[in-house]
Amino acid sequence: MEYKIGYMKTCGHVVLEKAEVNGIHMALAVCGDLDYIPLPDEAEPVTGALKGMIAAAFQNDFTGGVSRYGEDYLQAAVLGYSMSPAGETPLFGPGAGFGRGCAGILAAGSNAYVYVTEGSGMCIVRITDVFGKKKAVRCISSEEGGEDILGLEKGAVLIACPECWTFEYLEENKENGKSLEDFVCLFDPDDVGRDEALDRRMAELAGEGFDGCAAALIVR
Image (cartoon, rainbow, N blue to C red; front, side, top):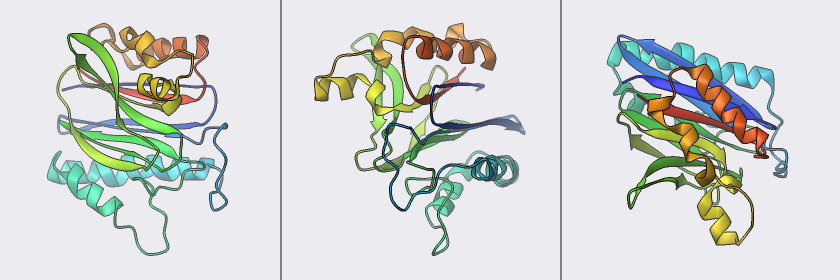
């Protein structure tokens, strides 16, 4: 399987990484710190140093582990992320310190670890077939935060995005506006040949007034 990754942002922060080791594709996407979410008292603004630490953890520790142990290292890494030393804020997972909060996707081979920090206003959605139609379905919400490991196969699409973009959120809150349902066609794996092409497609979301930041992982 091969990964395609892309992102867009009008506000907030994005960390996007990609690698391949021994034929195993890996990707990382962290999106969040939205301007319209209040900054918690204990939270610190996202810095370039923090984003660099997240990228380095992926490029060094994670890829090194996958190189030694294969794609199953993802499960071992997730256990390590959830057991950070006392007094230290984890770089990944639902307790990660990333400004106002974030959503993240860490993928290797046929699985992806997804997480959302509580109260971040972010979510993870998966584009899937619902009664024969492509729909963007929320996997994890920021209401309580959470984490999960999802199986990946060719044609899979995962998106870290603001919760207010999702169809379910709009339905539950009876708000008017656009949702990802209007733009599912932008994420068609058969039509996305390169990462840059996915970036351009996602830029259309910003052009249509989607505020915030998002990143997509497409499996081909």
